[in-house]
Length: 611
Image 1 (tube, rainbow, N blue to C red):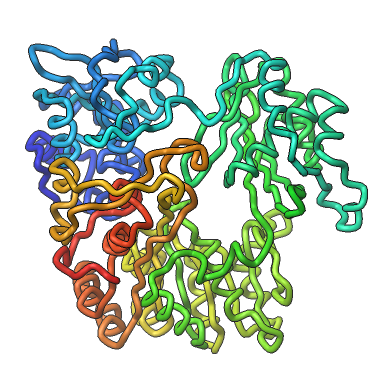
Image 2: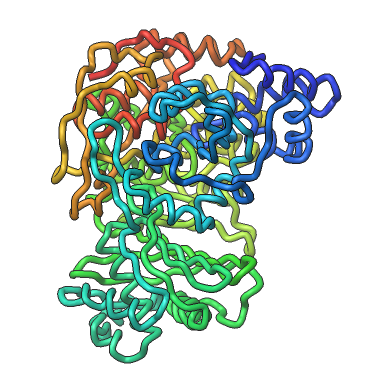
């Protein structure tokens, strides 16, 4: 079992096992499942192994202080030398000073690298106080103290290079509707956005220009301006989040949420209803989740907008996923794979009778990679069929179908039906259960090339996820050809790209990696093109596990995960982190992004970085 650097955590773990709240096997599984977005303690709570109350009780028993940052007295003056984005990245929140000690709330008591970083930046002794990740996330999203921190005169300086970071959200407007519209409307001069019903492709000739629609009614104007802003800023999602006294509009750009504007609570229902009508949803139903979609034409480019509505405490939360049409957005050579990985993956696309898996957390680019892969081999002499949930992109020649639980069309039933359609290639949106996994493998064993996705932390984890579902090891070894684990990371803005020195603060964060020869790297200092974030666009980090004879034998023999990883690295597999560092050296992204989106390497830290 893992031994933590923090001895109190070891004692807490031992006591929880001793008192029967957890088992060593549960601890092991939680440690294996956790990814970069969770601490070990988060995993125990989120897996419903223990409750927050039990956890905090045992932490207190071993003299680990516990707090809720939302109720603590925060001294914003102590934050002057620590960038707020670093605090969010490492999940640390300095609270106040006591007897020359800086008291810090964090859910990750064992993060030594982050502790050392903040200790050096603040030049103070550190004492950690435990808080849950849920409490800390709530603080950043709802606390009024955050504004005071953002307004601190020094807080937006970055490291020792004094790089300017954004001091405000992308668009900061007053809560008053008229002033919000006036500020947003100034961006409409060159806009060409129009709204299209999903019903008929023939109605395009009746589309009205955004400016004409916006003049007809305030609510239509609000919705159209928000859509135009989201698309023009390259957002992947638009969030309409109801708060107690307002409707908050946010956009996700390059994987990060930014505030766009706020509207009065009095118009919230009208805005949500307007979008529901566009999606042909039931506007009278406000108690159950709904899904819908519509199309958007912006500057002669077409976009599919997928909408999800979910009832929450203060109203219906709505998320709009923006999906650009066009083959350029789903081409393998446009996703940022290193040449050796791209070459090997394309070679696997020519196989028959095998399963190809793409793994990663939600929002890591799995579906886009699958689409790009089948688009790579799409031609008239191949019958490609899919079962998806939902269909995100449409392609000529490919027969696509969507899961429909109301009619009994699941991944498993759809896959069995597809086998009677004489397919050559099959894409299953996601393997969620044993039935789907077993049918997919049987499809491969009968001569079909099968694509699918799994939610695992890395490529080797896919093997053990299938084992957990009940699939026999000999079936996995004989059917799975390759597993591609991916993450999406932000790329440096080319308009404000600068070169910086590797300092004594940054280097220790990568002391487990082979980067001793990196003395300088690139980053973006922030400009209008990237909305002062320093990043524009995203790129894929990848880890490709190819099942050769050696690894096939290890899987069939039920070898341990670490043995398979060692064999894979010896056969040339570069980890997600190594792939990310290679792209830092190439000037594509930053070391901070590598830390943010990749899990630490557990084996083969001395392996060379790919080129």
